Length: 288
Image: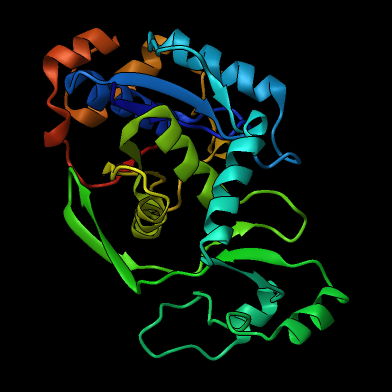
């Protein structure tokens, strides 16, 4: 059965923008008769904390959101990511990369390539060149992309065509990278509707291309507007009373409902009041 999902990183409390995205992800899933899943994206072992995972799940429940069990944690799924990486490597679709972030930032790249994209430095190294560089630092593993761009369907914004990069699949420290994990997780869990913040729109074409390369079904996307402060910054916990540590669930619903033009104070009420495909694409300006 198809599914939508909300996939927070347990590195802090959910703020109003995160909570609004969770509510919209629930709404899109339920309005299209999908399962709704919660996945804990805790690949970043240094910043992820069990106490934040607990508080995030508690906050979702406090708003009345329900999800289909179980809650999946990326930290438990290394074997799945390793198997996907091995499939790509066996097909000749990966290569070792020894570049530092500074080297990538300073490299000359093709005129049509966006800033920050990988310039292909290590794509065609000889075995002797790779062996010499392994003696200096452990390599990351990158996807050997065979397309320059890919098109995805966004349910709010139409067709989006974007650049496809040689994505990092496994970092130099041996940890699997986010782009690999999120694509494998969505495929494994039957997630075919990805609702998330508009800041991840540019990542969608490359992630969709990776899913295609792994033989996974294509997902549709809905990149919802971000919550911003009055001066245009992305909302953060430091901006004041913007989490359920300082707001009651009813107060949070009043603010989120007003941002969507409805008076709902529960997910079920919102489902009866709002067509998620009709929401505004303007950012939500929050004044804490």
